[in-house]
Length: 354
Image 1 (spheres, rainbow, N blue to C red):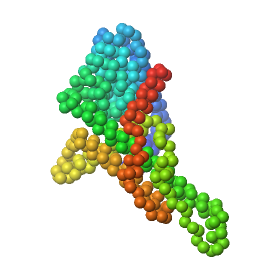
Image 2 (image 1 turned 60 degrees about the horizontal axis):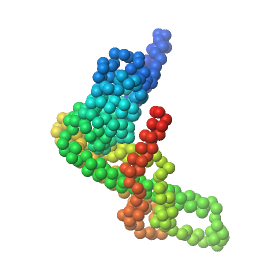
Image 3 (image 1 turned 90 degrees about the vertical axis):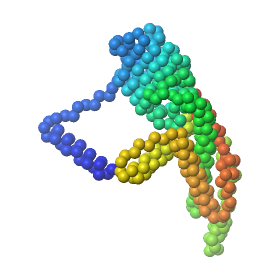
Image 4 (image 1 turned 30 degrees about the horizontal axis):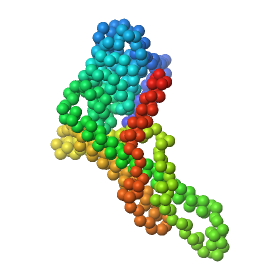
């Protein structure tokens, strides 16, 4: 990668020198103007034909309120724009086909307006960041129960049957991951406090340590750090100062990263076994389950590592029951907390008109 970067930098420098020598000036980059849907409809009258609106590649950033004559459309094409949410699409109650592919929709809460479209049958959200999150199709189906086709793929009967089960399963896994993350942050804070205490003991010796130094004897070991007491003293909602929706989203991103790594390694092994021929690997629900388990295993290993650090820092052996510590410090369900936080974000966005 360093070689590629150096080569690209050398090429850019060569082009720059060539332009200076011949008096060429590079064109000034022009950032496209942010456009609302109503503005695009006003400036491009040909995009509306009575039942369909096609505003593809119009730099649209927001679906704002449009005149009533557009409310009865059945087809809406919004691909290749800069949308971060589908907020505002609920004004098209007769909508049957919606395409918002290749935008910037990243959170599940940004898909909530789909629940206000009772006739929506075809939806395309390809190439949005949200499509890479765990159980994406099930989250969309929960919000749009009338869908027949999602991202150019027919919605199967088994997907409808497994929808609630898979989302409840994800809820339980997110709950455990959320509790583990809280515990990791508490233990990391405990390690920092022990280290700070050790530094202060050497910088500001107490009378006992001063007397031990005068007597040329080693200072007495400090009292041990009780993990259980420390965790009980920590605030019950340790991470409430953070955005719950952001926490849940970051956990899902960790799972996505673990899944992508597993798929990549599996594809590499199969390619090697096939004699170098490329092999396409498509992960299903099993790959998501494995990714969730991988992230939780990493969290458990981190918890065990921090407990070992605390034991070594205290200089007195302590017996830690990892399962007991994790259970006694369980946090509220990450999914429920996330839904509350996402609801706050959504209501705040509606109140501000964005």
